[in-house]
Length: 241
Picture 1: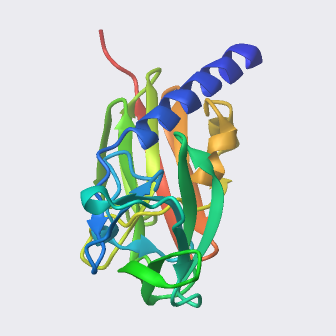
Picture 2: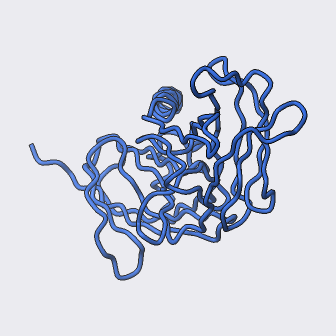
Picture 3: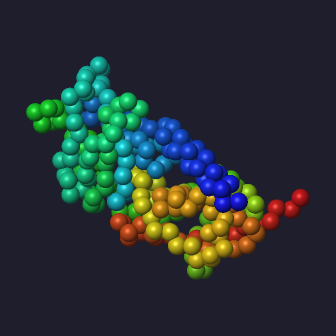
């Protein structure tokens, strides 16, 4: 049983990785018209866009491309405001140079493309926001909600015995989702629910993948970097034939 659960979890994680990588990412043209900046693997399955803003404590990958045939072979990325955004080179993704962007502090930070002499050739400004709140976004399966609950932040109803995947999602004050992968501290209040989670390794990433028996289950996620948290109730209802 445990082996089947683990196998299902690995398959689920692989499918989610493909989904996160395959969203419709939107490039932002640099202010000087030389370089396109494209976020990738930003924690959003619907695609990444710097216009959405980066969540405080969140990370996203960044790749660049030259506009009108401009070469980016010797171009590096750097932060003009390291107290707001940190930029780190990481291993190539898809055979292309890639950097990781981290939301260090609230505000507007400059992401710069620089040549080997550290001369700025283009830039974009990236807004970093402290999430106004966290919410759950259904990704797979039949999850209905959220509805108000007198004690918890959100109440969701699912079909018992059916696989459901939900994603913890930080949103701005206008309820628009922010980009950025975050690390969460999960807390499962009902111990029985732990046995219904298909892959517990995904919980710190905010991915809740479960197949639950009928019942009511409560849990919470906390992002210590932004001091954001969410508590939820999941009601798994038996499906009548």
